[in-house]
Image (cartoon, rainbow, N blue to C red; front, top):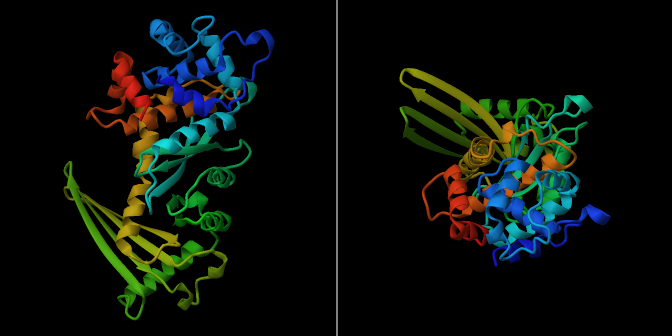
Length: 375
């Protein structure tokens, strides 16, 4: 039945309850919660109401020895559930769905759950760092940022969870750290890391290199160039990409040998035209990739799919920024429920409707829900 795969992947999750508190089976609670969130539930109350509305159908493949759990039970269980174990079950499940391709871009970025704070107990809103497989449109994993730290400490923990061999890992400037670059290389992947002013002199040095190169029209330098133009919605977007390799020939790039695998510096110019208005921005990257401009430009564009394909959809279709779930581990675990639902809905491509409409359809049509679950 539809729940068999879920049970198999989540059977390693330990029940955090003791004694008489185990009135409802843990796997029943997990299965109902996943299904409910796919079908449009955004709160514990809505998950309970989903269960009650679908009880007769759910009883055909779940045990439900004491009926549908209450919203308090759902909230309590997920506040106690070990997020690492819950995520391990998710990764096992997604591992069967994902068809990893050589050179796929894995975008890593953080998102704050804005209303997960609790001023009464001094709890700040949490930030979750996620890995998004841009080709498969799947969340591969997530890691909570420690309240006394930042994304720099969360990214290595997240990478430890992932099989990224043969992929291109893209991270914004916060994650441009030598240890992170080394970890990506050690895991047999390539990196494309954004530069700003937080890497000592590196950003300054790379800007100077490209200024020097452009003044000489790249003469005598190992370089590549490509340009793309996109038109639509009344605007024109022009992207240009220059690459430089053999960076050790530029004596004034300081501490170059401290970056494992580094072989290419990248400059991308983004120009946006709307009517008579024109905006131009230059951004810089370092990469372990060969200095071929077009695939690097495409990888940079793919990185921003995590904003549109994951973060934006979580806010619009799943109302994540409105969620007040915050007790114990509940905020982390509900975040993962949303990502499970979104990842599975993204794989269902028979219809052309958006994610919100797919959630409604899954709630209306049992056969469609089973199709989403068994992809």
